[in-house]
Structures are given as C-alpha cells and as structure tokens.
Amino acid sequence: MTTWKDRMLAQSPRVPPLDVVAPCWRMRSPSGRLLHCAVYKTAVGLEVRAGYADDLLHSQRVFDVDEGRRYAEELRQAVRAKGGFEDLPVGGNAAP
Image (cartoon, rainbow, N blue to C red; front, side, top):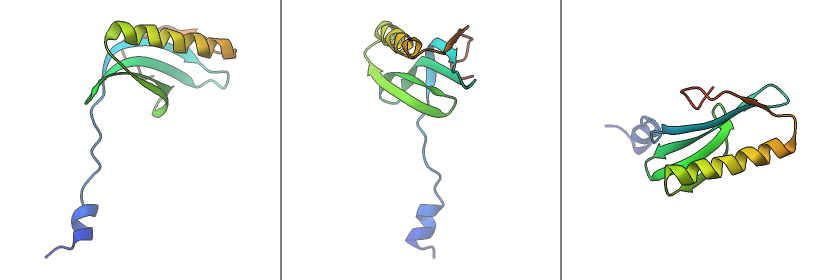
C-alpha cells in the first residue's frame, strides 16, 4: 500500500495550455535577450503576456484580441521609452 506522500509526489504538476492567438511584437534587449509579447488563449480566457523565453515579466487578461493588441502596443511603447531595445520582425511564433 502506498502512502499519501508517495501518491502526491508521483503526480506531475499540471500546466494549463497556452495557445498563441496573435503574436504582437519582439525586441532585442540591450543585453541581447529576446523580449516577446503575444495574445494567448488560456484556460480562463485571453491574456497578453510579455517576457523573455520562459521568464514571464507581465501578463494582463483582456476581453478580446483587439483589446489585447492595443494593450500590447501600450507595453511596446513603455519598453521603447526605456531605451536600448531594438524592434525585431514578428514571426509566426510568439516565443523566440
């Protein structure tokens, strides 16, 4: 018979799926890292997410894709205002 600890440790953590709905922008930071932003479909609705690869820096739930694109543009302008970031073409995938 297994113990409670054995049963709980055997389970892998559940990660909800993230589906890219609309890639918004990509930038190269002054240190050379790739910063990206996109609208994602999550288990609870649409979300704008910005970050470096697997490092999420900012997220915001949005009502629809148009609102998500507007919010992503506000984020892009805020990042550009910091200086030193280079705009990159947006590919078919939000993550670099």
